[in-house]
Image 1 (cartoon, rainbow, N blue to C red):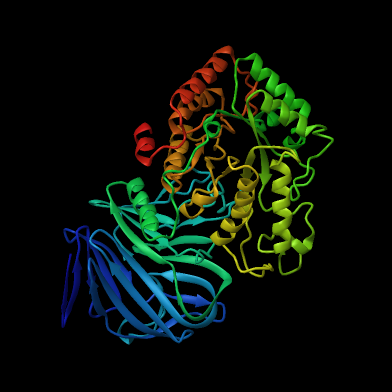
Image 2: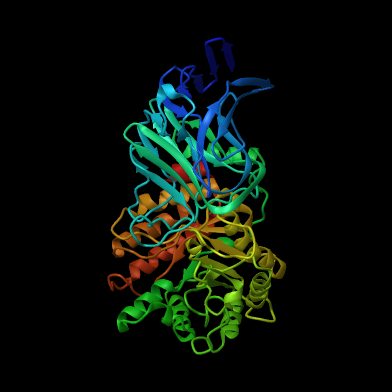
Length: 582
């Protein structure tokens, strides 16, 4: 790696890239190692507080400092709303990062990267400036309802914590995946991933904004992060690799190398964690369809006892049973509904006697049954979700976890945590503490995880949150619901790749619902052992089509479960293995 610092020339030449610092405009040109232009990066990015828009009013000259294998380029600037701003390119032989730091006071609204208002150079006018791009295509690792992970560099894309089946929000399947976009070039792939120190992940979404030949990135803070004095924003790291999944892995590896995330390759995986799973949700949906009912009303002990009897008759012996939505009387306090489950403890004891473990389904964030004083509220005072930043609710949640898992309570073995996309987002939310965005997700999951392990060290915590920052507060990543009418094999293979890269310590639950038809279901059942732990949602019929399972279908399930058990520990696999299998 070498750098050139002359009167009218400032460049850095590294193994996989070059940075050319323009002398007549506030741009840095990104090139590949052969000199092919990849992007024109606008340097004077906007960092917007609630009290106004950030316009860069003056900018200094680049300074250069070298230390070992790292070269740092630094630029000082002045702002309409901050006392000072600092921009840095921190360069190493195979990668570089772009950093921003502000000085002043304010609550962050949104932070732009490579785009912003500038009036510092009258030659180029004023207003909002974009970066330029010549990428071939973009890649977003977040699953969505359309199962489209590739996008034009001239169109936008978003990775976020939220989602519901509504226009523009149909991406709740992973909440979240890594905050990292990747872009194809003539000679491989380049990533732009968010690199935040622990405690600084207080944003809710990472967005790629685009127009024809122009782009910028942004993080949404929504007013919940306060700057007092000097504040360093998360960096954007640039990594280079031969494929979109390899460059995603390079981003995740960089987070680990920086100490921003925690991985434990020696993490002990209890043997029962990789046993085939039976989740009753699909069969609940089928039972509801026969009576035109509401599927959560069919989470009943009588039905689950029949499910288990049918599985036994068909020679199927799952190691894990999931009691799904809604075994509890209220989502928020997770106390059993005695009308549906007159003897929940007895059912769990019976499964334990048969060598099976039982997970209880939890609806994350739901405030049903929780006092409003322990909830986050909107500006009108309406309770939105539970508030894990409130010490009173935290104690309620911990007590609930203890009761669900302890021998003095239900004696369950862990949790399937669903609906994590219902985390709060937007302005005007009232809460007790400071956590927001990804930090709020980590706080909530961390409370459940910590208390679960205190009660049962081998308790299994399953989520659909494959972000590396959450790797140490989850045990199993669920691939989540299937989009009917789409290519199931392609979609779920993609999800398994992302999950294995993002949370390498976690086991993968392959999920199994809903399904377009029995043919698609059979294809996916056969693939499941290659992706992770087989998961079965049906005992007699496919709910969406009313197709009855045949003896050949039961034989297929038995065969795949035997295959999975032979290759233990299934589900905890490297990204390379999953790519090969896919």
